[in-house]
Image (cartoon, rainbow, N blue to C red; front, side):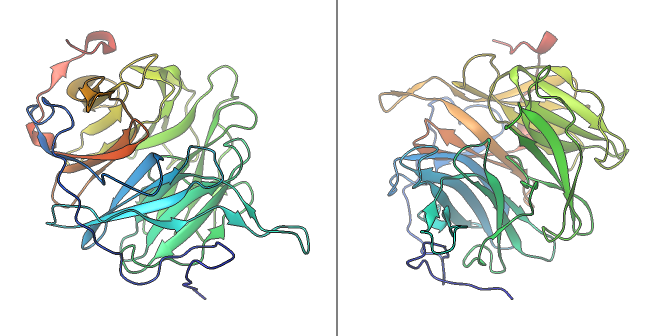
Length: 376
């Protein structure tokens, strides 16, 4: 039975009642030239002020009436006070609601009579099921090498949430990027572990998180350390993953709905060991948001491809421009194509704020990237 509770002295969530709406001023463009780039429709921070100084790892989903974002926030990544926060924006509205914490890392002690423990929360992932609930996956634990998967759901577009539950042992859920629907209520989730090197595996749930299966790791964590796969799909049933790595994005392919995967090989795109996200557009093209660098997260880029192998430069979302006296940088993007046909992107800005950018993929100005080199 679903249980919706208030945050009480045990510290176990949950928001009840309507999400409070506080109009935040429209921040407009973070960079003076961002809105001048072809295809950029809107750019704004989710909020200007919050009760926490640091935030990271955003995710975004579209519901019937809202866009919903989630991210982790607190005094700093890995600290025990870091919880999962959400903001919502009504379709047609100009502003996002103020951040509201909907999950924390307070856990019952496994020792009889023991005290409650609190651990940091990590990497939320939202998914709106077709004719079903809004799912919020996240991780809880002292470190990425020892965390575990959690899941809570909402039947009212993020206003209230069920009591969170821990996923089965060995199941993490989508580790960073959104899952992809294969059929009916079946989700393919890109996952990874960090306890025995960086290793990628896939997890499949046929019933929106109730039961699970998983593949073996597709790499040994030594020769090609990779984590945090993002999933792309193709009309012929092929599936591609692009994975975070050190120096270059690595890719693998599946022809059997994600059950088995080809050996990891390098793509043509660099990666400074930073999170990425990609989305298969309704016209069949692939859109990728990533840091086009081998060393720095300062530059955040958008690229497009028709085959997942050859990419064209589209946008620079961040490029170290000084904003408000601070050197800007962007990281850990999330991207969806909404029912309006536009691509909605969120990402971390200096670990201080979450930025939101909307682009029209049909108006992007594309340029060749010979050998994966960004055109100047």
